[in-house]
Image 1 (cartoon, rainbow, N blue to C red):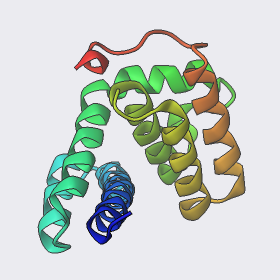
Image 2: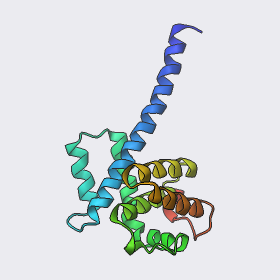
Image 3: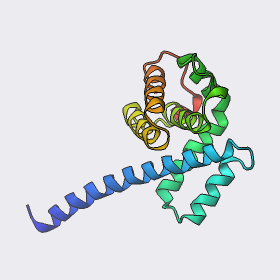
Length: 162
């Protein structure tokens, strides 16, 4: 293999890693925006746009965060219904704000971002739950996302076909 081919192979891997890094950063931004909006001072969209500017976020991370926030805002009632069906012992209004934001954001991606494979969305959001909330939330989110991904609660959104 010649040197240019080796460079192309490594840059292709680097591009994939950059894409994953951008999606991960987008998830964190979306979670922050959905969480902050739950306090009622600003919409998640306004919070997100402020963070994108203040933190000088990459275009790819910002685009993923915007998709997630849009899905959560547009389908929030349906997402909350899915949470209630998948975890009836945990009413959405009784959840800690961070756990509610984690579940809403995770289901927003799982149900309404068709380019993200379900197993990737589940893994990423379970890890965010472990980081931001702890082991009980990690188990709850893993269980809810697993049930929903298995098709146990309702339909996929019309947005998923985009």
